[in-house]
Every structure is written in structure tokens, then in C-alpha cells.
Amino acid sequence: MEKIRSDRPLVLLLILLAGAVFAAGINWGLPGKPNVEPLLAASATLAQQEHLAGIKVQKDAGEWNDDATRASDVAQHPVADRSRPVTLLENAVFPTDEAIAAQNAGFARLLKTHARVEADFHKTNEEDEDIGRNLHALDVRLYNAREQYLQANDSQLLAQMAQDAHARAEIIRRYRLYSYQPDEMITFRALARMHPDQNDFDPRMYQYGGLWIYPVGGLLKGASLVGWITPIGNTTNYLDHPDQFGQLYIVARAYAALWGMIGVAAVFALLRRLGAARAVAAMGAMAFTLMPVVLDLAHEAKPHLPGTVLILLAILAASNYVRSGKWCWAIFASLLCGLAGGMVLSGLAAIVLIPAMPALRRDSTGKLVGITVAGVIIMAIVYFATNPYVAINLVHNPEVVRSNLANTAAMYPASGLVAGIVRGVLLIAAGTSLPLAVVGLLGALFLVRCKRKPAESEAAEPANGILAMLAVLAVVMLMAMIRVAAGKPGEFGRFALLPDVALLLAAFTLPGRLPQAGMRLALAALLVVVVAGFGAAYEVGFLRDSTPQTSRLDAAQDLPLAAKTHSTLTLLLPDDPAPYNLPPVDLFRWRIVLLPKGEQTGDMPHGLLVRPDDTISLSPLATPLSWANKTFLIESH
Image (cartoon, rainbow, N blue to C red; front, side):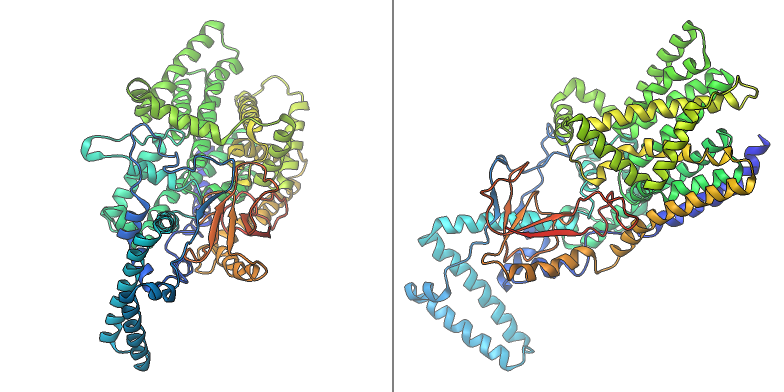
């Protein structure tokens, strides 16, 4: 107990340090950047700019479907057939004004009046407000007159233009509400599906658990009450003030970062329990803070870091049971396992800890069965307490559960074993940093080969238990990950977070094997420096995307240059256009084509293929797990 108390000031300092690191760049990639909107409507006419107002965008895009049987993370208007290229935005144009005037005398007179007023406006150096208002009114009349002409003469072209308006509004809505991280918006879509005034708190999405969704909602409500964020009543207002919607992301990211800070204390405690000296344990906690996968997830509004931290806390509690055999620790560990599953669905893997506790203590068969049964029941109660609508809907609305699970399964189909292993190894090396992964593997192999003597102190058994539980959980999660890892982008590395932490803990057990204190500190410090070298690129990326000029805007400037070599202004996209996978482009000029799913065929349309660079590089300058400071590949086809 005295040792724990003496560690507290150091742990507090480590937590504060982690908080500072996680807070830097927490406002990365938010909607509402001032340089984006002008690019989206660079060639829009005055009449077309009328459709950029929030109320018009919402009307043209259509309300988000509130179908009670559709999960929140399921696309609301998916393209049904992805077996062939689909034109999302044609950008069909009116016939020339001269052509319409030749067939319509009324339009010809309106066109002459517009030309005269426009000339008068320019003569005043565009400073006469009355003439300016008159010119704007004539712009609108011309736009309406063109539509009336098409209604009478070319209804097919008019229908295409209406389809363009709908597609354009959907894209604009994404740029005004979505961040640069594609999954963050899911949380807010789930919160938007709730209707507290009708006692409806069903998020209709369950891979992100209630321990994530409900606290984020509560934090947003509290932040609005104290004036930290601007409360807005509806989506239309958010569309007019995307910078205020961006404030919501910061609150949700802060919740993830808070759990990351708790994780620092958990890693320190685990290393101390494994026998590490105070200084070595502190350096291990610092390495946890700076590890690429932790830095990435602490800057994203997603529950994977909190879920992993809860598993680490469950391992600590379980190790207390291994040492003491007291039921209270078994109950507490089971409760934490339930909370891990209640935070994120993948956290349910923590269930393996429940039978592992009595097995590692070598309890009698009766006690092992009793603790396992009681622990699983406690875990289930906690899970359903934090996710009550899973149980409710399994009985009353099973379709929404099927919708959610089917969508998740569709995103993670099973893949080849060899390819999955190769990609899994790459993602782990990227998430930990390659040197730390190698040292961690050596540490793990050393611990496996080392023949430990029978326990001579009460600390020896918990240490053995911690290592065994970490190993079992890491293997379980790795097997699940490898099964679907082939071909996945770098962000998929979040599912290897627990194995990454296990490698970190194994790496920081090696200094304790060295004979001299100076050598132990030197090795631990070297590991921290190496991890910091890899994590620095992620921190720089977040800071860069917190500024007005981001990598996406750099890519947006490259597109017109690439287009000069092309006869058509066509963009070819693998996925629906959104701020995370497409730099801001002129939506009133470019034709946008959605490519088929899977491998591209030879009949791909001519145009510029634009896609994020998902190369998984192990260079210390690369950030394959992060969507911040993303580079884009632009290829001519």
C-alpha cells in the first residue's frame, strides 16, 4: 500500500502529460474550415448559390431517413448496383442563352435587360447596391426562365438537373457535417435518432456501445448548458454553421482522450505489477502515450481506446483475484469486462478473463465453475444495463439489430489466412512502431522461454497471471482481426490495440533483466525516444489539420493542374464523395462517377481517379493509421 501511495504523484504527472499530448490538435479535420466552401461552389452562378443555404441544402438532399428498422450506421441512400460505374453528378447544363433566345422572344427580351443592367453595374465599379439587387433579381428570373423553357422543351434534361441538385446537396451536407475521419459521424447520427421527448433513447447502433453513446450525449448536453459549445436545434442550422457542429466532435474526442489518460495509469500499474522499477514503469506509460495507435485513437471520437483501457483495468482486477482469491475481485473484474463490452462490441472478448482467473489460481473445479457462471452473469447484466435496447430490440424489433450486425459484417468479410496474417503484422508494426514491435516480440519470447521458479512472493503469481491473461486476450483478438484483415486500410489497426499494448508491456519487461540500474534506465529511455520518433508524425498531422491550410486543400489545388491534361472534367471515385476521401472540388463543374466495388475493370470511364493514399508504410514519417494530414493519389485514366 505504501508503494502505491508513493507512486501517485508520478502517475498524476504522467496523466497530465498525456492530457497535454492528446489535447494538441484535438480540433483537427473539423467541418467549417473557411477555405473549403469557396472551392465547392467556385463556378456557381448567383442563382445556383441560392441553393447553398442550409434550408435549400436540406430540401434538395432530403431528410435523413428515420426508419425504425434501419441501423444508424447504415447508408441512408445507398447506390443499389455497384457492379458498374454510376454517375453521381453529371453537372448537366442549360442550353446556351442564345439558343433559348432564338426560340423564345420573352426570354430574348429578359436577356437583353439583364445585359444592360449588368453593364450599368460594372460602370459603377459594382458599388451601386440598388443596381446590384436588381441584377440579382434578374439572375433569378433568368434561372427560372431557363427551367420553364426546359419543362416545355426538354423534360429529360430538366430531370437530370434535378438529380444533379439532389446529389450536389448530399455532398455539400457531408462536407458541412462530417469530419476528416469517416466513422466519427456515426456517433452523432446515433444521437440524432433518439427522441428523448418521446422516451426513445435507442441509438439503433450497437457496435458502439451505450457506455460510449450515452456519456457523449450527456457531455454534449452539459457542454451546451455551460456555454462551451453552441447548442443548435436542427440540422438546417448546423448546415448554416458547420463550425459550430465541429464543436461537437471536440467534446466527443475529449471523452476518448480522457480514457486514454486513464490508460496511462493502467499501463503504469501493470508494469509495476510485472516487477518493473518505478522509473521504467513511468517510461513505459510515456511510451503508451506516444505510441502511434494510442495517439491516433486519443484524437478520434471512437470507443476503441476506452474499451481497451477497461480491459486493462479488468486484467488488473483479475490479477488481484489471482493473488488473493477473494470473490470481490472476481466480481469487480467481471463488472469491468461487462463495461468493456458495453463500450464497444469488440470489448466482449474480455469474457475470456472470467474463467482465466480461477484457472490461473488453480482453484477447485467447483470454484472455477462457480466464478465462471457468476462472472458471465455479471458481465451480461452490465452489458445489457449499458445497452438496454439490444435486449429490447431482440424481442420487439429484431430487424434493427439485424440491420446493424449485417452492415458490420458486410464491412468486414472473411479474407485469406496468409494475406490476413501479413496485413495484421503490418498493422501491428505500424501501430506500435516497428522497433517497439520487435523488442516487444523479443520480450514476449523471453518470457515464454524463461522457466519461472515457484512463487516466492505474493507478487510473483499476479505477474504470471497478468502475462497469461494478456497473452490469451491478445491471441483471441489477433485471430479475430487476421480473419478479416486482408486488404484493410491502416485505420483497421485500431482492432490490434490490445495486442499492441501487450507488446509494449513485454518490451518494458526486458530492462528489468539487465544487471545494472543504469543499463535498465538507458534501454527504457531508448524505447521511449524511438516510440516518440514514430508518434511525432501523427501529432504533426493533427496539428497540421487544425490549421486552415490542410493536405486536402493542397490536393484540391493539384486537381485543376491534373485536369489540364484531360479532355473531360470527370472524377472517378471508389466511394461516395465526402471530406475524408475527396479534396474539396467545384461541385458545379466536375462530373463525378462512382466506380464499381472491388477490382476495377478495363472499361473504366476516362477521367481522374482520386483516392486517399492507404499505403501502409513503416517509415517514422508515415501515419498509415490516421486520417489526418492525408495525402491523395491522382491518376489519369
